[in-house]
Image (cartoon, rainbow, N blue to C red; front, side, top):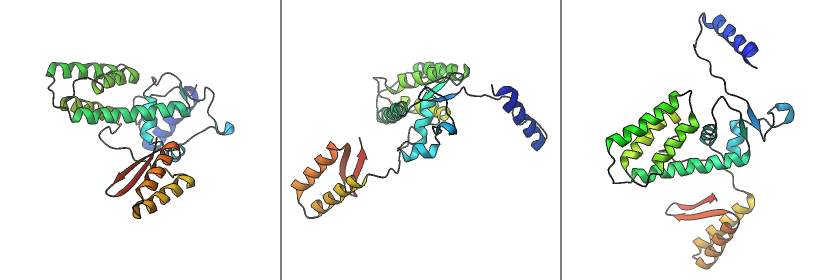
Length: 222
């Protein structure tokens, strides 16, 4: 329903500004739904990337979420679906890391077959769900090989998921959790290992993982 109004208007503005048509192809996604309904400011259910980041989601999580549906189909946004996408991105990065450490060999014809199938999916009107299924075939392959890791990086030049980089989100921890962390820091400084272990278990019960490193304590939400 945007074609007769918005698209023609944008074309007119672009030609007026630049003197020529800046693009020969315009691809417009179907509607993004929110909890199965319309997204609008009046309903107060329109979210920005900044909203996602404040809830602890890297923008790349939203990108891989978009790959679960063809751009010509409606996409239903829910926070549960975004959590699932977050898990998928973490697993993909982890699978890449495992392939990178692999020492097994893979025949070139097998690699080429995967690459051909991936390219066919991408060139089939950007069939991202099919393309991602091929990505997962490579990522989860029982054979662990650096060649598969290199192939995944090649796929990522299209996907843009930065699978070789760690996800870092600056998520503020609740005051209650920060208080326990500070207590544990004091306990460790005083070499009160029993209290330190108790507080670590308490953090775990409240949904947080604790990892002690040479640089200090790393606390992440489960």
